[in-house]
Length: 314
Image (cartoon, rainbow, N blue to C red):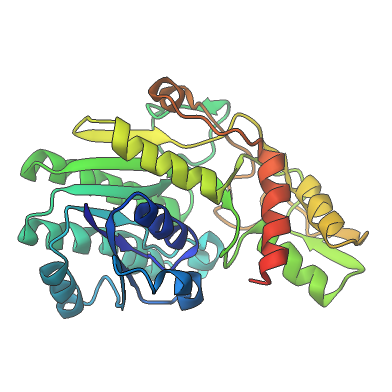
């Protein structure tokens, strides 16, 4: 296929571009580089089936040219703010970067006859829920602007599928870790320990417990879902049955760095406003389709810390 990856120079998007190329697809990546980095995709530039455009999805003229030239069969939409803590003080960031990017892409797709779209959604849409969360959970009550913008995007994806015959794949991500990350718990811990190897500040009480998935496993799941699931609107939680506690993550990261710092907690159950301190996914729908990760949450954390430190990407 000829595919567009919106947010293709970002943490997840860059790995997805590489996987799509390995499958034989022709890939165009568009990214405004607000969070993405050109070095994430530099190794792909020699591939004749890869093209990169520094462009904002909200730039009408730039995206019109990209769609006209690309003649795409499918769009992978990973463009978003993605920094939940940041949007507490700047809610407009989620309107523009997370919701309006979705509407803009849908509008361009409609004009240019592209009717297949993969959307990177999030566990943040569910809000604070006790027990394992299935895709059919309701009512859905996000508590972050990020989760709200993702949920609004999902609603428009559903309406475009019904009104204009689009085929939609929605994957609700857990916490993703690995190389090319620009924020997140591992990234933050490494930066703090580089600054002060003797003391590590941990937001909240350290008891926050969530599932973490290694980025290459996530990309594998994305590709699998798009190949195997054939409904008009396909919705999947991509998760892992285990979870990791923040204090354990701190120990894993410190151990990888050969350090034994004091841990200082800021207090409170959540790390920031809009943070969901504990959640777990019901992944049975994805398992029935035939995919599950081989790495536990702790294994994903340890591997990611090792690879981030090795890549010097922090």
